[in-house]
Image (cartoon, rainbow, N blue to C red):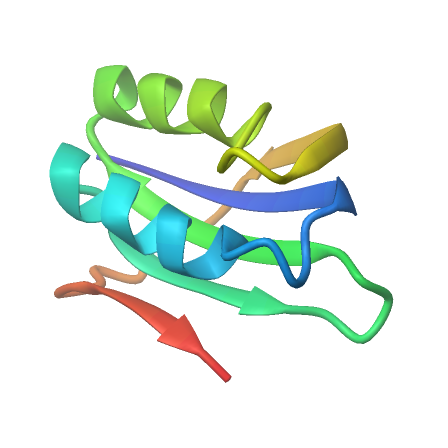
Length: 89
C-alpha cells in the first residue's frame, strides 16, 4: 500500500477534472480525495497498490478531454487508510 500527494497544474479547473478523477479512481480502486486549490491547481491524495497508483498517476498526466495538464508533482506521504474516493469542495 502506498500514499501519494499529487498536484496537477495547467488548465485543470472548469474541465470536470475532479469528477473525472473520481471516476478513474473508482474504476481502478484508488482511495483518497481530490479538490480544487485557490491557485487553479488540482490536489489529490491517493492510496492503493503501487501498480494501480502508477496507472492512476499516468492518467493524471493528461486528465479528461478538455484539460491541458502542464505539470504533475507526486510525493509519497503517510498512509491515511481512506475508505473511499471523494471530491472535496
